[in-house]
Image (cartoon, rainbow, N blue to C red):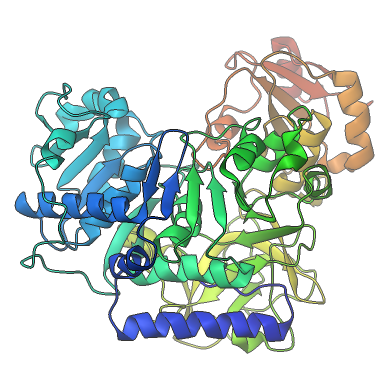
Length: 599
């Protein structure tokens, strides 16, 4: 992952050169993440590496624990290239386990702790795990699928304390580790190389089963160092992240500042909106991280003395919507915001670090060749690039939405596309013959737009944009406005088909278990912020939600269910010609199907 920022071209170029110099040196010296971490241990043995409400681990403690893990699994017969899955909540041992396994060349899939049943089983099998380490809090989840886990996959249960009971057929990892030396890893262990695989990180699975994205030692370094240089992080910074460590944002972008740069990272097992800035005060954090809808949740909390009592000098993340950006930085006295964009598996990544509201990055129009990313003309539904008569792709003009891509250069750490463990899934993310025959690029699947100056703004996911009344409707833009009007409630917007009607009508699913939304006020406010064609024709009020680990609501199933009140238990409403929302009954539904109610 590589970042160019929206600072001046000279500053961006300087950050880029520093990044290249560091990564080239580590590549030349064939250093792994564990090698770089050991540098920090030597420099800061007694400094806190990871802290939380219940733990305060120094760099020496993390090193010694990871050595125990390495020596134990090497003695168990695991060797370089083997795969051991990890299902564990946010805690210092989470980092110590994958770091220790990396010392003997073992790859660690970091499994989403929300996975259950078929999706959990899939995460284990798609990565070809030879073993699974799971925390005691997940023993029931493992028990539920144990009969389907391949017989040759060994199980190790990690408990909070030694000598506690474990799942039948599992080994007591906590107790066994106590007997292992904390010395350096056995000399007989084959070490990993700089470009070897380190961990697998799973996609959120909003559109199907999770896919395991490949993260090498080199790529981990690029991600952590890239954001370090572009954001101007300092070694004495204290980072606060309540994000899951099994994802790139928390597990690499924040934790990488400890592992690779010697900073302290404060973690939390589960995100709390009301506890966010309280934690920042408690841990004396200077840098805070957010993702997805977290900022909206925090903004929706009642005012507190902690709102401005913290020492946070900057926040960074992705998904801070422009509709709430000014209110957030004003209320919480945030000096600087670093909004980034990128996919775990991709090589097209950008960043805005001059706090330009709504921008997710910047690419110079004067020196575009410095960073080979582009926005191509594409079909908004399929994401397929639109090609010219010569069969090649076409660049978008300023302010013209298109699909975002990153040029692939094999053997180049900055431009390589490692993709997924599943090679077929990887192939779907590559587009060939982009600007010349034979070249390749990573296809992000996201629609972006660049203004005349080079600032980039997110528009939508391909397939999420739909046409209604002859207009293109961006679900992300409508979601933001609907959520604001509904009091910052969780919202997803999608298009649904109506018989005898062209296009797809907008439908919004709003999480409102306590029935707090006043539909009269809601409709009036919505009319002031959205044009008629963009206003949802149907509303669904959810009493429970299914959310991913990156705080994204799953909309696929909602979209499939449509607006049939005989099949949906949630309360449904439809928009009348006067712009009001009225209850959608089975009788009204039948009239819609017979084209007696028109939109």
